[in-house]
Length: 460
Ligand SMILES: Nc1ncnc2c1ncn2[C@@H]1O[C@H](COP(=O)(O)OP(=O)(O)OP(=O)(O)O)[C@@H](O)[C@H]1O
Ligand SMILES: [Mg+2]
Image 1 (tube, rainbow, N blue to C red):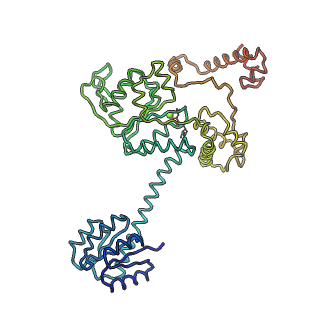
Image 2: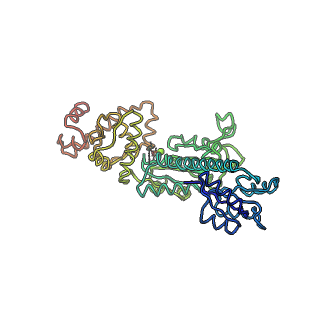
Image 3: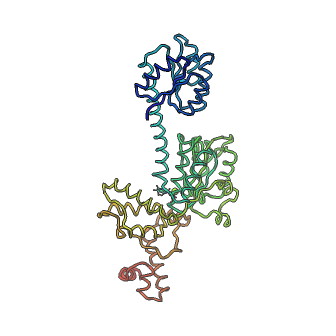
């Protein structure tokens, strides 16, 4: 498209000669002789550049300039002044003119200014595209989702990002993307240049939690040889991501609540209130309502956190998003492993769409990594996807469980033993269920008869 230039000058000679000259230079030109016509032409012709004479009969260019800019701030205005009228030129620049030029001038001089305007516009466009693509990158690569439920999630993230200090609760099963959402909120907010710190409430020992969060004063407990800042202080201005909030001990929950409400705290052993500005994002895969019933979670904290909550649906409820995600992961691992697998067979797609996906997006990602690494065909086939629908839907392993964690603290703990015990337990149940029918028991367990037999020989 040609650059459009509007000449606003009351001298007919200038309109004609400058107009023709610019047309010869391949610009598109319109001319007017007064302020009123100028504004009309601005609307009709939508120029990129306006060349505005400072003196238009009894009108002053400085009165017209702001009206043009007010109508469309992107129109660049170049003021044409009488030689030596520097004061007006400076005024014009303050009012938003791009530049000024002293009359009389050569066509080349004005051409140089117009070219500078074009360069600036191109640069602005580039920056705009870059900004936009950054945004798309954030949502497009890290948070893929076109299902209406995921679109709602994305819309919420945008709103939350703009409202800089609301507390957010992210809920969803393991692997549904809670970490991804927390990062998206932080990275889209004005806090993005400050830190986001993630604290896992399940893995921070209970007795250290308060001092981790809020810091401590010298001598406040045995071993406190110096004063130490807590995470809330360190991350001032940024975001604190409290993962697995459902595992936070009750006494810490009340301290957190007070902190969220007052935005200030005291270090352990400290007397002074410390004020900080942090946004709290909490996440959990636990049923907090149930935890409240069981007196494991404070109702008041729940309400405080739940002002805005984001629920991430399980992967199996996201329909075609499964294929969308699988395709993205396929591209990713194609690159990583230098492969060239071009897609999925229909059968493979069916398999992906009908699987349970207990581990949600994380599991899908892992399955794809393996399939790409081992796959040697043109497409991923059903065979490349080792997905057997798990039968025991009600057996749920909750790795966040405190019982399990305490077990791990035992120095004699052995994973192998644990697995053996578990195998024994389920084999027994399966045998009972099947009335000691080995074929049936093997089927229940998802094992071959031979594999079951081998285990029976080993354990019983
Ligand atoms: N919508 C999505 N688009 C692309 N990748 C995703 C999406 N959701 C999750 N992932 C990827 O899946 C994996 C698991 O996501 P994430 O760690 O955020 O889950 P989580 O809900 O925090 O899990 P957990 O409860 O175990 O902490 C990550 O590798 C993440 O990049
Ligand atoms: Mg997580």
